Length: 121
View 1: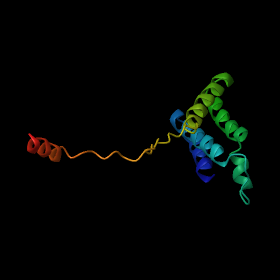
View 2: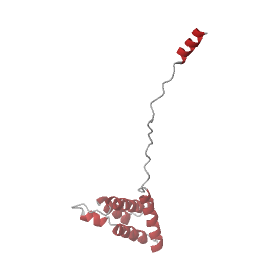
View 3: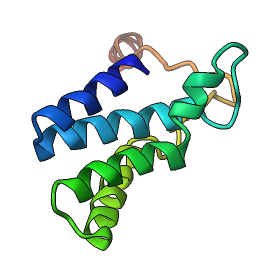
View 4: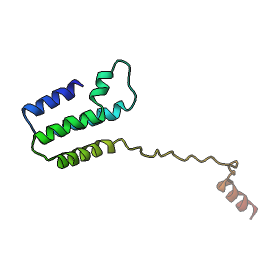
């Protein structure tokens, strides 16, 4: 939470789009990580990183920097999509292990067979 507060404080003093996206990305990641559960003793943090609260901070800074509401919202949506895209569940590939169903067939010794045929001839 302190990083996010400091990040937005920095943006308010020395604005850059890159830094604003860094702040918004951090908040989006934190919101995703915290999820819906509320850890005991972390009520302030959960409230700070609530999806709506985090979006409000980002949008406020983007609009103050000159974007109209729609453009700021689209920029935030793109940022959230990029961050959340990293968390999409990817199917786990399970290696297929096959076990033989029959006992291995013993192979005859080619050297021994040759000797037998030669000796018989």
